[in-house]
Length: 150
Image (cartoon, rainbow, N blue to C red; front, side, top):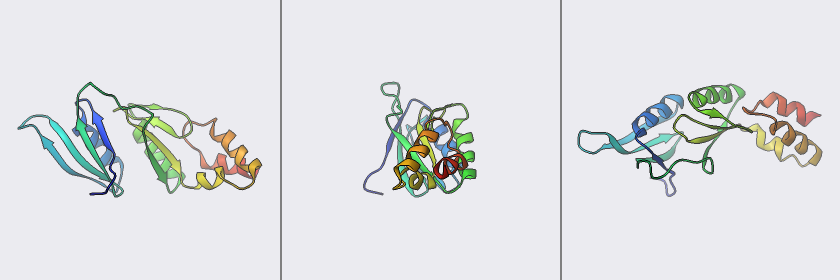
C-alpha cells in the first residue's frame, strides 16, 4: 500500500460508490470490501489509476466537503467531457472544473494542458486564461487556448 492514502467517509452508500467509481474510470478496481457479518459493507479499498483509496461507511457523523477534492489530470477534452458527464450525474457542477458527485465527493476534472496555460511566463497570457477559466463550469480547453493566444 502507498504511504499516503486518501480515506473517504460515506454514510451508508460505500459499496454503491465503489461500484460507481470503478465503472467510470477505466483503470480502476475494487481491491477489498469488508462486511459486518452478512450485512452492509463497512469498509473497502479501491484503486483508480494506481491511486489507492480507503473508504468507510462511517454514518452521519461527518460529511464529505468541497474542502477536499480528487484532482483528475485528463489527457484530452474528450476525457474531460466523459468524466464530467458521468461524475455530474446525480451531483452538481460547480465552477472552474469542480463538481460534486451524487455521493458528495468533490472532483476537479482538468485537462493536463491547463497548467502550462495558467502558468505561462507571459503574465498577460496567464491572466487571460485565468479570466476565461473563471467563467467556466466544465473546462473547455479550446476556449482556454483561444484566450491564451489572445
